[in-house]
Length: 293
Ligand SMILES: O=C(O)/C=C(\CC(=O)C(=O)O)C(=O)O
Image (cartoon, rainbow, N blue to C red; front, top):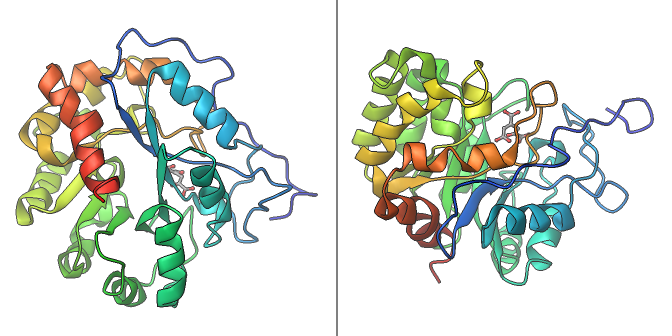
């Protein structure tokens, strides 16, 4: 894809509402991205989408508008394995951001150490065919065995390949964080086949975490995303010590159904109704994974 021939896409709300829910002090938006700015950080030649710039200035303004304190910036597929934009945003955050990188599995120990010094605390393995050309499990496992101390692996997959991925996930030697709960069909409800399979995965190891994120991606009925709230609230309550939350801003590939970030924040008390759950989801859990040093 080339910037000259493709039209750049805006996938985020120009003027998100102020949420009614007020996050607790120290709340972490634990899943968000930056795009570019392209002039400084060009997108990957293999990128499957070409977004407009959504850099750290916009991300930090949104953080403050929504009442959050910190961000975990996840390297988006449009930047490939060049983590410069993510590192730049972390460096500009005044200690208020950490990150998850996407790396070439052949990365050296020195390069991993440099990512650690730049605030990276995990690597992401993406299995979505519409986002990446290949996902080599053996090479992923090789790098997972060489990660700096305290790091984890983030995996992104869709529910229909969970069974196939189980031996791979079982072999990951560090904690695992599952993006968007492995994209279950939330219309099946809390006891549907997808949620049951995901619970079996969570029960198989106590160091598998998940992000209770993306009602906009998972609930096609649209806001206020009632099916998402019904299906996800029991999961948050039953696995409250290993769940994270994030906006997913700037919502890559959601340009046809852009969510209002204020409405996304207002999902939090529906899936985590008590102050205790909200503190775990937004403060204690992400601090354990990302600011544990
Ligand atoms: O942002 C997300 O979590 C989900 C994405 C984009 C993505 O992961 C990426 O580009 O790396 C998606 O489903 O298109």
